[in-house]
Image 1: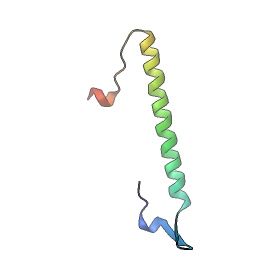
Image 2 (image 1 turned 90 degrees about the horizontal axis):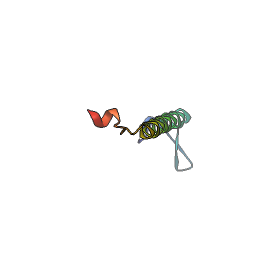
Image 3 (image 1 turned 90 degrees about the vertical axis):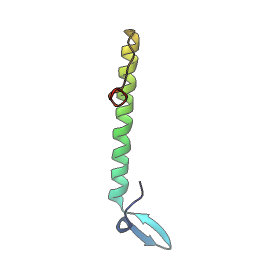
Length: 60
């Protein structure tokens, strides 16, 4: 993601990103990490039952 120009602050010739943009990216990454972990656990459980796991994105 490229920050919006209004979210950049120039300081000593170096661009700084506003803290809320950094926090939003951190929260987004955490949600993505939890989603991937959930899918891996689901796939592992189904594998022990002898079933293949097909994520809903691939099923469409």
